[in-house]
Amino acid sequence: MAAVDIDMPMEADTGCPILTLKDLERDAEVFKEEGNVFYIKKDYSEAFSCYSKAIGACPKNASYYGNRAATLMMLCRFREALEDSQQAVRLDECFMKGHLREGKCHLSLGNAMAASRCFQKVLELEPGNMQAQQEHKNASSILEFERMAEFGFEKRDFRKVVYCMDRALGVASACHRFKILKAECLALLGRYPEAQSVASDILRMDSTNADALYVRGLCLYYEDCIDKAVQFFVQALRMAPDHEKARLACRNAKALKAKKEEGNQAFKDCSYDAAYRLYTEALTIDPNNIKTNAKLYCNRGTAGVKLTKLDQAIDDCSSAIKLDPTYIKAYLRRAQCFTDTEQYDDAVRDYEKVYQTEKTKEHKQLLKAAQLELKKSKRKDYYKVLGVGKNATDDEIKKAYRKRALMHHPDRHSAATPEVQKEEEKKFKEVGEAFTVLSDPKKKVRYDSGHDLDDDGGCGGGGGDFDANNIFRAFFGGQGGGYNFESSPNAAPGNFFFQFG
Image 1: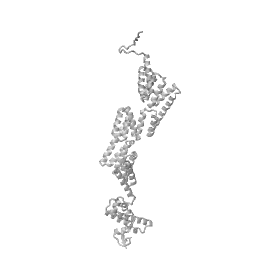
Image 2: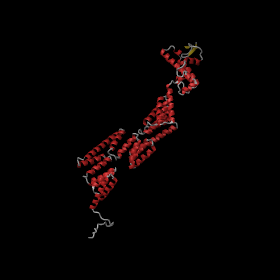
Image 3: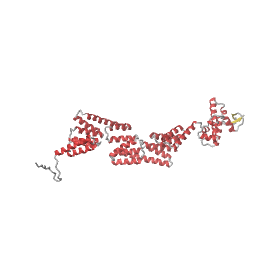
Image 4: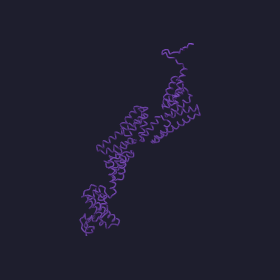
């Protein structure tokens, strides 16, 4: 029997067979089954392709949209998945899985209220659905974390906001709004690399995201890269002209840069009062800009040194270090101020901190110099004993000795109480010690360089054969034994002469 050719209905213009509705439905089912196989194998890209073909063949089938939504969710394409889920429930209002997937998409995107409505719909269709019950609780938790984060931000408790957003993102993993809030708070906490990482991830997915551009600029602004920061703020404002935070940050950045530069110029012009005032004004612009404010405090401290406001300069450097504990320049400036005010213990501590951080030859020399000054400060300060400066000439040292020796000589205080006599005798000996050292060029050099003079066998450290009376007699040219001070009946009060017996 001869084979029978069956004519297929052909499309008029193309010559292709016309597929009936049943043919399309059959093909759609084949595509769906193929998609299911790929889905089970976790080959979600191929599964997506198959489900798309099924939808193309039969666009009125809710389950196909539901399956493709599930695949898109596995690919973390939640916005597209949300559209498919919503289309599924539009086609079939009783499609429980469609409502469930729509709710999960809303939840992943951080839309907790919308998610709650979807899960409530599932529970109306299937009251015992455990998954819907759990997801409904998750939605409530996100709403609570949002509330806590909002309160924390108002109170400037940025750590709490980061904590809340981390918990919320554990469920709403695709929520850009939560990520941006977390990134902003990380920036406000000075955790710039983390904040930049979050913002950059969002910008890779959406280069026009104004919030991410703002946070990226904020990180640069707080890292004192003000020019680059302004560029990001301007770009954010192009994307969203009503972005109030970007506008405020841009204005602060420009004002801060201008005021700081004014202060620097005034300092260069040796107008230290003006520089001090301008740095003070700059510090009021944005208390959140830690790094720039640290530099401003240090700059103001430098101006304070020029104005001989050493205590204020120390306070300013301390403020800078509190804001930025890694700020080496502030430690160096404060250490010099401590040295200038003879607070050598504090100076050594600062130089030790600097040398631990940066082990340079220069820093090592500064530390050694401070340690030497500290060691010298533990000895008697012979310059202070004589009341002269460290650069005093030989004549100034002799004049100072004459004055102090006569002032503290025991004979002058013979009528005083035993306590006063003892104290004046001690001072008289110290004056002799000081003169012995500072009037001897070799001893003076050793003393100034910080060497111990106790081993010299002389009077440098108050030991040996030192005798203040012998020094006194030698200085005043006396001969022989004792001497005494008497009030001259014809002399004005306070004038004395001495006799050698």
